[in-house]
Image 1 (cartoon, rainbow, N blue to C red):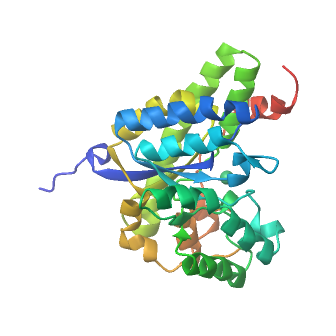
Image 2: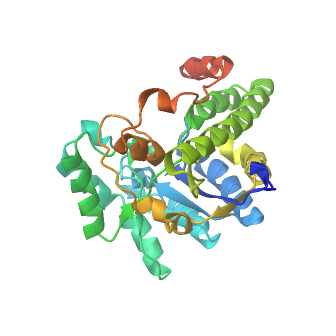
Length: 304
Ligand SMILES: [Zn+2]
């Protein structure tokens, strides 16, 4: 008789990726260290690898580079974490000329590339802002060709999510000193990410026929600064081990044919599904953001 192993006890792997370093915040550059320090502390403390994707325009005050911001990135590397390029100004490929976009990639790796070079490492990964990889295959391939020519490769995502909506709602509650709203949003966030991960586990089984090493998209924001540990605990409970982006990408699934181009900033699982002719209702069941969080997100532009 076959023994069925519960899914939760299976070995799963996930690579953590944080976008918008040094931080994505409505509070301005003064909040960068308040956000990034606890994230790197938790990662180092838990022995969890991660890569952070930098927008180098945030390192400058006008034309002047801000030493404290660069120092934050140095501490991130000293904590054993990796850095990648997320574009100098976080441009949207779908509303930017190709020449401007490629120039933004090159400029976006100057400081980070130097920090890595000083440590005997190289800038290897590029993450497209908004996961916008090109509305045509010609544009997409021009960008990836440029990355290859400069020694980089694309950092895909397989677990996309609307964490950024929770984060904006949460940071508004921080600014407004609303402790109850902070706790409510954070609890809903951790539960939502758990459900979302289950959704992408199922999508992986349906699209690839097995669970692949997942690549999770997060941002360097106050919500993760405060709630990374409980979030990672949920992953551990689902049977996950944390691996580097390189380790995840060593799985052969990441050389799978992908002919996707279009407006959507979608996951690589869904790119592979569309390449295989699957779509529409196939993607149904993606967890939604709770109404209260959406309400608080919408209120984020208004005064407390
Ligand atoms: Zn981003």
